Length: 222
Image (cartoon, rainbow, N blue to C red; front, side):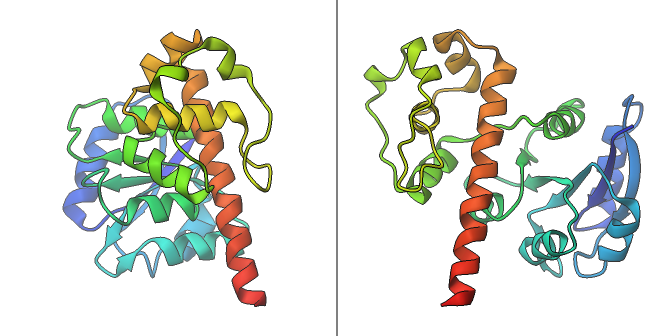
């Protein structure tokens, strides 16, 4: 059974998340904490499937925690609670190891269980701003919206980035997202399932993690 560890800013936030999970079939609560600097031993012992954590904690944001998890070889999927997709910390934290996010303004009862299920299944969402920042991180341009809807573009696997990480189909997907198209609209235009589009977004996040990790190693060796 998949499990989730809740790392939230306050006991009240933890209680709200626990209430959202109450009655959700198929998920076990692996643990809770309100301190990013003190939860590593509990995480190491629990080995959760998903770590659901606030972007900003009272004792700092979660970048350092993600770094320690990578060093220890722990690889839970990381779902970020964020107050807004425009938070300036969201993209850097996604780039350094998080796998998705949930905007806290979404107060529907199914929001957290759905976000956890997506993270566990390797699916993700991406806002227009994050798509633009991802294109910039790979030094790629945003294509013209009028030329990006053809279904054939969904299957163009030719490399486009300097290091070959990103394929033409992924650049096109990022461009459509950057122009404001929703995953469902892209799925319809490309004749794909919604799940497949979200899986492709998650794959782009993973490639972003690899590029950022390689950049960090280069800086250490410089």
